[in-house]
Structure formats: C-alpha cells, structure tokens
Image (cartoon, rainbow, N blue to C red; front, side):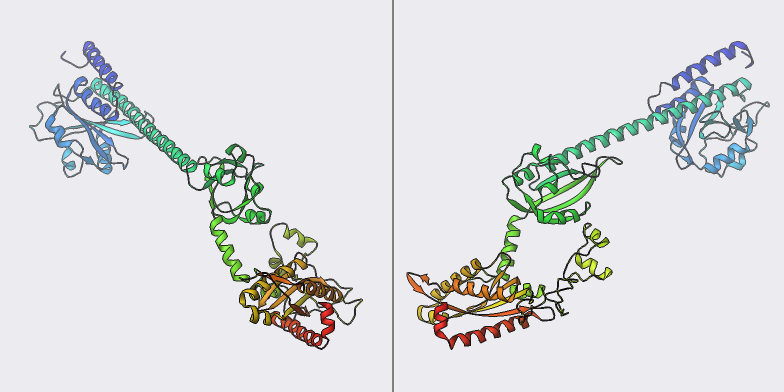
Length: 552
C-alpha cells in the first residue's frame, strides 16, 4: 500500500465509496442527508474534516453540516458565506476535474473574505504533495452533470489521512461522491418539499372541512332564512338548498322548496323588483308566498359564492322576516295619509292623488287626435319597456311625453263633451245641528256612516276622501258630464236615509259641486272650483226647499 495506484487500494476505496453512497439513500430528512454527506467524507474518503456548505434560497451558502471535529462544528455550523465570495474561490482554484484546489501559497488573498473557514498556519511542506494546513480543496455539488447546472452546495475537505494531496483516484472518488451527494440532497429537498406540501394540503383540507362544517351549521341553524340557488344556465335561480328557518317561514318542506325559484314564490307585483336585484350585494324588500296562499314581507340580501377557485358559482340569499316592521311602516303610512275617524284618504292624500294626474302644460281636447294620451310608446321603444326601462327613463332621451294628459270635458256640448276626471265636492247639510244637539259622539258616528255609504256607492278605482269636518271629495275618472250628474244623485240618495246612533235616528242631506280636473291647473284650483260650484248648488237648493225634500 505504498502508492494510491495499487489495485487493492482502489478496490478498498471503491468499497468504502459504495458504502457511503448507499448511506446517502437512507437519510430520512434533509438535515440527515446533509450530515450523512459530511460523515461519509470522513468515514469513507480518507479526510479528517469535512463541511457541507448548502446554497440557500437567497444564493448565499450556509455551513449546514460538519464532521470530524466537535470544536470545528461548534465554530462553523450555521455560519454563512456570501455567494460572491464562494464564486471567487471556485473561480481562482486549480481545476482538478470538477474539484477546486487553492494551495496555501495563494490562500492569503482569501483571509478577509466572509467564507467560514478553520484553516491554521503550519510548517512548509517537506515534499511537493504534502498537505499544508492552509490548503483548501472544494468539491462543488450540482443538480446534474450538465454544463451550467444549478449549484446545490460545496463540500469542503481538510487533513487527508495520508497527509498528501489526493491522487487521481482520490480526486475521482471525491468527484463521484460529490455528484452522488448532490443527487441525494436534491432528492432530500424534494422529499422535504413534498412532505411540507402534504402537511399544508392536509392542513388546508382540515381547514376546508372545518369551514364547510361551520358553514353547514351556520346555514342550517341560522335564526333567519337562507337559501342557495343556481347561477347561470337553464336552472338559473332554482333553489338547491333552503334552511329550516326559511322552510318554517314559508310553511314548506325542504324537499318541496327545491322545486321552486324565488321568482315562483314572489308576489306578482314584486317580480320586477326581484329581477332588478343584482346577484352580488343586491338587496330588496318584497313579498314571498306561503303554502297557505298568504304573503309575508321579507328582506333579501344576495351574495355570490364559488364551490372552488374555478368551480361553479352559486347565489347565497339571506331571507329576513320583516312582516312586523313592514306592518308598522304600512300602518304609519296609512295613518299619515288617511283620516283617523273614517279611514278615508285625508286631505294630503287627496291632493297627492290629484296632483299625480295633473301637469303644468294644458292640452286642448281634439277628438281626432289621441297622441299624448297613451303612456306606451310604440315601435322600437316598446322593446325598451320589456327590459325594465320605465316611462320616466324613456321620456327624456327619446322625447316621449309619457304623462297621460288630463283634459276637462266641454260641459256646453253634451254630445261631444268627452270624458274626464270629475271632482265631486260634498258638504253635509244639517250636520252642525246634529253635532250641537247630540254631541260629538253622535256626529262622529254620522261621519263614519256617511263615509261608508259614499264608498259603497262609487266604482272600484274611484277615490272617496275626507277633507275635514263634514266635507268629502270624490275623484271619479272617465266620466262625461251627464255621468257625473248621475253619480251625484246616487251619492245623495245613499246619504239621506236615516242613520241610527244609540237607538236614535238622525238624517243629513248633502250638497254637491262638480269640478273637472285638467292639466294646466293645480290641485288647489281644481278643489276650489268644485267647492265654489258646491256652494252655488247649496244656495240654489236652499231657495227651492220642496225640491230638496223630494230629492231627499
């Protein structure tokens, strides 16, 4: 065994190399693999010290494993050398195949760089290939043997057990070991990344299962209604799931709910509102049908949820029962717009309804010209109505006057007078004496009965309102002057029969004035006109009392 070239020495080295390479494949983690690499150099390749410098994600190299000296391990483990300093060392070293050797005679230029090192001074070599403590030998590890392959790390070795520089066979063995170590470290990294990915995947799956269970419980046991519906496709809007609260609210079983969409359950008057409610963040207050045929006021809030990142989207709708609040709002609105005694529309509501029929532009009636009397544009603009554009939106940009003009009939021409909006002003005759004689209780009862009789004598769609005191107003559209006169007779005949209050029969009469509403007039002007005509009629009837008695 005098020289390294002897066959049995090569065979022994090969056996040792084979063993340490086999050990590389038994490492269970990246840290084990790195330490096995360092231990293999000391145990199988004939060096007393070895360090594994691993490339970090930022490119610098860290001493990840050390073998051969506990003191050296304590000194160097975890220390970092910059990539630029390592590139400088690998570039300046003598090329022994893929190895890089820097003799002690040139190492002085490396004293001030930041690569961790343990080299010490020593006596000059006694013969040319004697190892000096200042010599440096590096074995780079690459991901593959391809030129330009990624650098994984560098094995640093020191103190050959022979005391000499390694010969060709020793260099070849170290190169082979560095290559196999690079593969082992790459595999260990891959396994570590896969294990971390599996851990993250399992954690994400656990979180997803927990989230799904949390959502399921929140959905099923929510105190207010919730539903999940299809989005897009032929089944758009169809209910997929409904929680127990929504089923109880609508009186329907969950299996039955899956047959419907919200458009099937919504009140016919609220369908347009539902269709205009956006899917994402949309809100609406509307009525949904119960199983018994009644309707309940609800507040809908929509949001879009996805099954997975690229999976199908669903519509999540939160349904809140607002029947009690809506009932209070309707009651308040009714109180504000209706007379508290008779329940009829009050003066403010009357003026509001009348003003809604009037505009500031008067229009003369032309029997041959019906333009401007229809609220529905023809042709292409009817197309816009089907997509939710109302008359107000179309009027401005397209120049249509969507207002239905109200035109007063010509009372002087009975045959061609036309029809209009009649305003019948009613004042009760004899009411004050009843009120003064029998008290307000009897007077209130008379007003309530008169209101009932007036309401029963008009058509559906006509308005009977109480202005205040003993004054009432009737709005009746589509009447000719003769029709309006006949209506006053019916209303008077409905009022004059005796009214029984607390076992006592009382009677009141009524005076009527017929006014006609027309665009270009204000609501006050229309009411004043009817009021004036009522007083004219009252005065004329007072001078012909027998006629009044026959009428009453």
